[in-house]
Amino acid sequence: MSQNVPEELSRTIETLYRTESGRILATLVRLLGDLDVAEEAMHEAFAAALDTWPEAGVPDNPRPWLISTARFKAIDGMRRRARFDSVQNDLALYLDARSNEAHSNEVPYEDEEIEDDRLRLIFTCCHPALPPEGQLALTMREVCGLTTEEIARAFLVTPATLAQRIVRAKAKIRDTPIRYEVPSPQELPERLGAVLQVVYLVFNEGYSAAAGAEVTRAELTAEAIRLGRLVSELLPEPEVIGLLSLMLLQESRRAARTSPTGELILLENQDRSLWNREQIAEGVALLERALKSRGFGSYTLQAAIAAVHAEAESVAVTDWRQIVALYGRLIRIQPSPVVELNRAVAIAMRDGPEAGLAHIDAVLEDGELANYYLAHSARADMYRRLGRTAEARSSYEKALALTQQEPERQFLRERIRQLK
Amino acid sequence: MKYICFGYYDKGKFDGMTESERDAMFDKCFEYDEHLRANGYRAGGEALQPSETALTLYWKNGKVATTDGPYAETKEQLGGILVLEARDMNHAVQLMAQHPAMTFGNIFEIRPVGDMSEIIEASEQRRRKKTARAS
Image 1 (tube, one colour):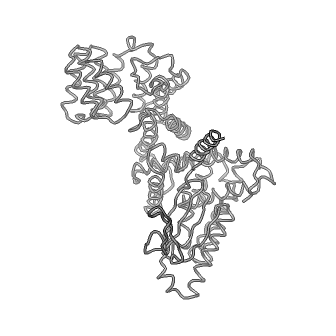
Image 2: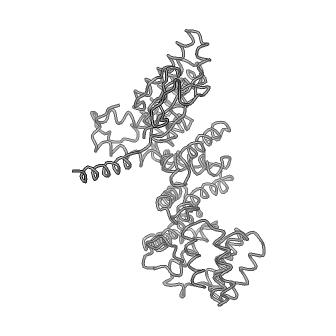
Image 3: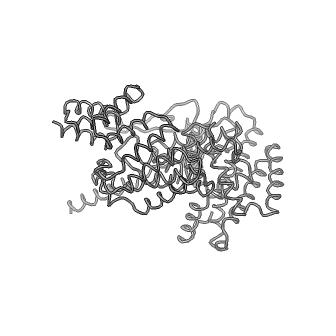
């Protein structure tokens, strides 16, 4: 490989990698039928670019150049291995024939076909046969183009652990085998649900770090939004749009959510002038689009709740009646004690802490949230507002014992201190 | 990013191979090495002589002491190291997973290189200060 790549060119190639590798890889997977083979071929094509472009110049349309170079590299690789292994020889001949066929009618380079390739790859990476952490790791690497190390850093695991998740997920795809395809219309709702879950997991991992000192990890939320945009462009189903709206509306509050010293700021105390108006406007517009269609679901309803907050000037003038109603609808399609807890808090805002407390206690009686710190912290808040100091303090202490997240802990300790 | 791949082999097994078996193994391995080099993935590497040629140094009672043989005695010997230039850990795994040496029972340990640049810079600053004070 050439060592003297001009800096500007190597930057161009790096940018190309970031913007195009997802598309190129997805198309190569279709042409070559195997994720590992496709990936290796793509890396070799980028290596070839570094080698030949300094003299030959950057092609007018780099993507087809990279795809066809990768295709030749893959066949070369098969031939190389075939010298020692006759099975590989057959494979090389097969691939050669197959990709010549594909090449002859120029299909692989049509934009529309390439977008379909991306969708196929997303569905494969988020296949329910793969463990959730494998789906997550694979999607971020193969679809978003992040490196093993970047993903590992974001999820607070070692690169070796993350690398193994990817190796195992790929092996599972090959051995099952999981086919690279967009699911049939009958399967689509469930399979799309799995994709959206991965996207939202990435977002939540960034939005509320499970451990560690940072509440928000902006890079992950940005990556999730980028992924959500991609899926919504490829498959504009109501819930896809609803999820994108939800993420934008939550992300819009990021600057207001933590103090400069890293303390958590609750919605009621946030400086609303710090909310990102552009993201709110986009989120609301998407929400309206999702609501107009039939068949929206829980992501859209959650986005609707976030939008009510986003459009209110303060907690006092927030339309709590509407929020309570939206939580009611959410419980009907997605019954969950966490949603019920949120509804109870909204009821408290609408009807006062006494009513809220009764609802929170009812949720806690079910037992599922007994170790959920937010349930105890919400209960403590009701007691505090009712002036029942001792009970408030003991509930805050219970919440404190149940969370490891540093900013949350700081917040709870401060509340306990104020009650002394 | 650079990854160092430590290749371990079973010397007993290697010694038991016929010359033609060894030649066949070397041919496959070196052909793959050439492929890695041609794509810019092989940033360096060396084979090692058998572990009985090793000399190990350590500090004992305020003096350097020595022993023959490798520091860590294992059934598999460290046979060589390869420096890979790969995009990320999974890329390194993928490249090494195809190394023909794997099919002969060899084991690879892949480690990302450590970035000491910040530590080195901090150390340089400390030493500059010391020199400045001394003069």
